[in-house]
Length: 227
Picture (cartoon, one colour):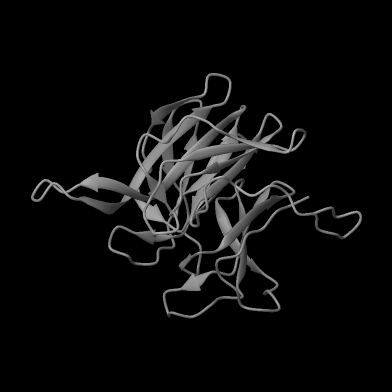
């Protein structure tokens, strides 16, 4: 999409069709990370798109297959957070999915992943955004499939997590974006099993949330990008 021309242009498709994946852009490439394939199975596939050459390439796979996770950037590295992951049931040896707080860091320079400190709250269908050197994770569904208002911040320098003030409206499948040093969350699916039009903004300086103008239309499973 070109905002100046207000027009869309088709690009080469991902080699692996999938949904519930995470996406991040670093060092001039766009990375498609994990998700669920056409059969609904979790996958560990990671593919990188080069807009200059118009080509996709397979890179290092995730250590565990996962979906409904999220990803964000810090210092040229991609942090992959939470979601559903594949585990082996010790009783029958079969694969099953489990909500996780796992976090892995991908380094495009070495094409390798390293496991980092896990989120205190395991969750999926959440969001993550980088602000002032910290990763802010908001909402989602927890290990009991309950929609949460929990917000946590990760410091990549110390590899530690901090629990923050919760927002007023528990939500999952929402969107978030950073504008002018503040974190905005938009819409989502509520604990009342309805779509939300509620928009809240977080100020790191005061560790507080404030409600701002509602969306014109209640939405969930959306994305937000600030440009």
